[in-house]
Length: 217
Length: 204
Image (cartoon, rainbow over all chains, first blue to last red; front, side):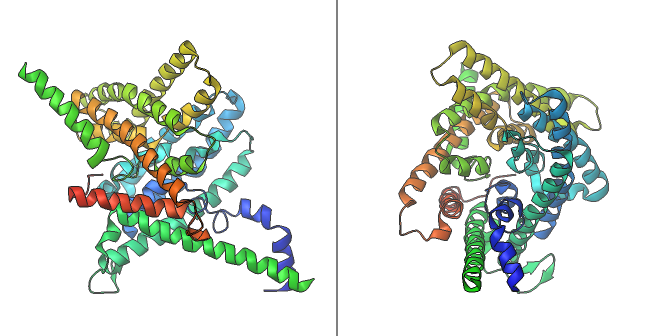
């Protein structure tokens, strides 16, 4: 890594750790948000795609609309505003997904699609006392969605490979060697292991940056 | 008389099923994000949180049952798409009933209880059981049994995971596993134990 880059990362590590919601402060791995849709229904790439599309269509718009309404209504009932916004948007999102995108395949994710309306990943913002601008809510919503989808597809691919030996229909092994990966227990355990590895990666990255700066001095 | 006993048996059966065999956390992962944050965050009292959650669930479940019966009788083409909205409105009504009750009783830590109430209401462990009972066409008695069992089951899960967290908070656990990873592994092993007990996966 170049010296200038190392210096920049070291000087801004705290700010980057807060803002980078893809790797350093991933909403799933670091904050424990959006666990249920990853642990239970995300057993293959198809299910993960359905959940990812729903989250893409729900998270950022909910955050933006709720931010806009909160500005005009006040902070007293922000939780209700966020949840009702998510529910109202969900009606349109589920209609589009059902009629034009996935049809009966949506049944594979069961109650976990409507449950997204109260998923902390989507409505957690209501708990924050700090108001945000609509442009900020768009940016943060977008990167949070990216971070969630990354872990979602990683977990779904891993579970499908371990349970069936294939990823997205492409066969890598004749049969799966860990059928438990498809079960909720497998989802919990695998996500726990992935989270530990991810956190170890983040810690190693931060250590390397601080060591790099010490060498430069 | 036999109808009363039958209903009572159905209520108790569904309650026990939701409490152990179909525990909201260990079998369906409902409200697991909140649970993991709850056991690692000492500022929120787990007993208050779970009591509020159970109360909200027990009040909103009958409202949800009748609302679902009503929308299923209508010929709207969009009734499946608005079901979460209807059920969330029922949870909001329960939220205000509980809030009113808190202000009426005025316990010593009213401020803390009111602060936790939105977290307990807008939780997968509240909307999840309501969706399960609605999609699986449970009767009123079954709905109430399942709702009460789910609330108590969530409390049981919080208790077990909190105790696990306390015991695992020592040096023998590697630093990268502390917090979320070790909690997920612990819940996973408990979920595996329940699967071994029942031998089947629950419907989602």
